[in-house]
Length: 111
Image 1 (cartoon, one colour):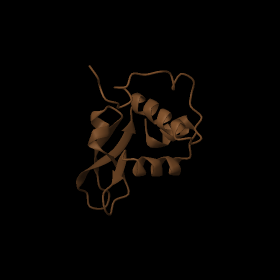
Image 2: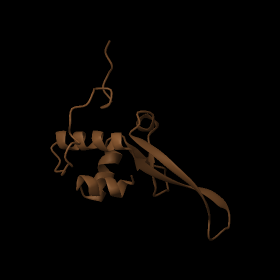
Image 3: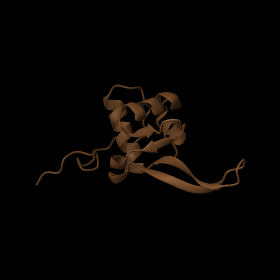
Image 4: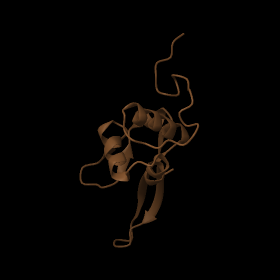
């Protein structure tokens, strides 16, 4: 789901949600660009992915990639837990805070 959809699902203001993602190492912006990009660690953990779509620039006619961060269902669950644990006011849908394994939450695996 998009960042806007995730913020709406969590009933958390979108701008504050984007700021939280930036400040907590989930996303970043390239210098001089507005769009968000996902950190590789969060992609590898299965929380985020980067949707890339080839588009044609209307001004130059050149083809380029449009990139958009998407949040996976697992990522949404982890975000809901982190935000509520930090005491931020989120309205989490029922079942989203059900117990999960430490590996799903990005914790260490122990043998």
